[in-house]
Image 1 (cartoon, rainbow, N blue to C red):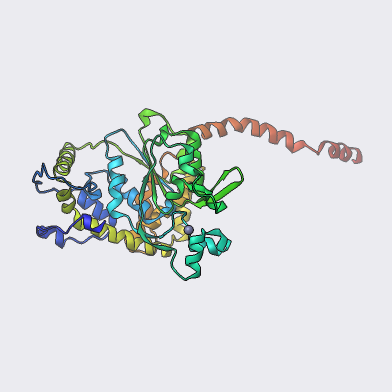
Image 2 (image 1 turned 90 degrees about the horizontal axis):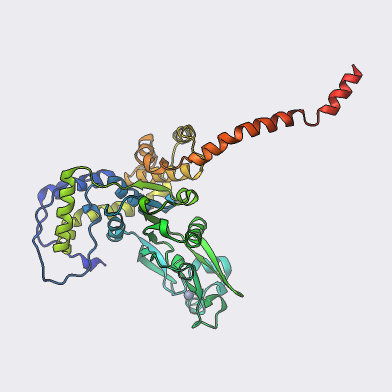
Length: 405
Ligand SMILES: [Zn+2]
């Protein structure tokens, strides 16, 4: 992957080399407003696929920030990009490729890990891995986080896995890993998530929430890890998303078209430049992409140490209550995002400003009009019930008390 982007043979403009970034946000804002020198057309030369540089996407700061926070802290719990077609949602997700951090990954096709042996003994891994483990050989190696895209026509069997007819001997291993198991420690991207069948969505959300899932096929069962950052995109014109699915997404970004004419022109120029010469386009952002990748790596290490002081947390919860939001996922996401934001700035304590910076994407679309109306409708029934209950069991006593008097 590293050799796909050679260092830029042309010297970098001085102004860019001199610039240093205090925060991820500053980097995102800076690059969004940057003007590019014209790109020479390179038609006729075959080039390998180089993704559009993430930081080269014009505008859409909130979407970029949300995706970066998701890379820093997987506990944020999923990112939903909501907007019409042609607003760079899929481009942005795919362009994350160059920024993805590293994780320890199983070397085996069945996904055996040392943790499996710790938890379930030597039989919990395949015979090959058991042998390796006994010989003191590693079962994992560092690998880049990957972007797994769920195809729209995926069947439930593709998603969770099914019987593998070729592997017969080792009982546990007779189930073929599905897309969810492949997504472990990766990003799972579902374009047009609102068009997916309910049974598939439910299995994905359950697996994401639990971090693992079990497949049963007759007498054979297997449990797989599925700790992934879910990224969904949807165009609300093409159908709505069930409220319980919406609630499962930590961050909700409204991706609108660019409003500023000058930005639209710049976006057009960049797309044109990219189509003419993807590599040259990528090279123009090489320095900033490296800086962002380094920030993400560092922030992922530091996030464990970032705390939210109690008074700050209390004030945030009061605000959530004032907004009339019920779901506890709200504060979980809000706090985890603020911690990621603080970690990206190299701070060990999240401030009210950190919470404010990530608030809109964590708080919007949480309030349920249905539930509000539903609870309002319940008020009169509740009052009636409590009034009846207040005298319940007293009637007998009351009469006795009267008799005594
Ligand atoms: Zn194995």
